[in-house]
Length: 450
Image 1: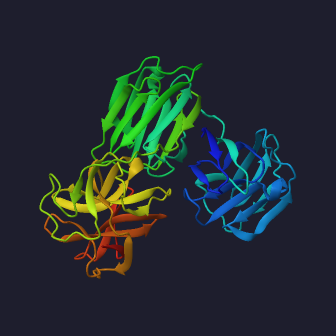
Image 2: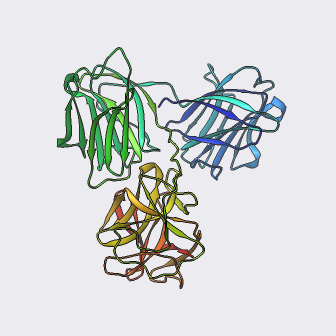
């Protein structure tokens, strides 16, 4: 998936991270010495972690290190491999535990190590230090093509928007899924289909189409056409990448969390793609604060618990994260989640805010329910106590109530590589979380304390 970035790194040994969807990264760097590259599962320095140091020790040698510990896994002399006055090109690959680094234009790596306990790499970080600053040009991989075989190629969807360019005669197909595979639930966008005469939005590979619009001559085999696909709390939109005009849109009444995208061509067409899928920063907002547990507009009843620790519930919409929001977990791709709550079916339900999805999610009725309007806990405690069953600690943080008036507490669960925030219902003896479109109950959980 192609994506070029220009990055400047200061002399501070602080990594700047970006997501990757393939097993390699190509880059050029201009630095006197000490170009450091990290491979991680999350967008921060956390174990497990690979590090490749190029031109370290005064631009004399390069090494591979695991989990920031010595001894080095491999070390080689590389005198003058970097240059402060010109860009030098390199590549790094990871495949089945084999970590390797090589120079641009050379197929044989100058560094290579086989990890007996490999882990999936989802992020790459770059930095410089030890007296060196650097300028980087980073490209995840070159543009790629899709053959005429209606088979999706998948990558991670790390934000609520996908920007791409496509060159082909017709049948540009894009899907959004909750896994890197053709599985339901699934959104599909067919642009320039039916011999480049119309475009559609399809849900779960089923007809009739949710949206059909005439788009004669939309695609061009000799010219790249740019598009944007957006998803926010079930609202899907396809925009012209040049003008921003909406070509198609549809609101899914039962949205699911999108984690991956796929691209393909077919029906006699081959396509060439350039895809950008780095997350756009969600600007902080400062909506009007509500007193802790005060009944917000439209919310039934209230929760009779005194404020504690200066915490407040703040109204927000569309993925907004108020300053001081309490981070209670993280998605499986490493994105932070925040403690949130929302109204649903007469209840006030604790849940999770995932900023890149543009909404909060609350568990109810066996399903994951996306909410464009929600409240975020601001300025509160971030103390979590492990417990199980109906053993809710005295004084646990009460974040809402059921439609019948039973108190609900804020809990979280470790599940499928995530730490997901949900509701603790003491009478059921579980913490319910929303995950991959479902409401899941866990007897072992952590509960938020004031």
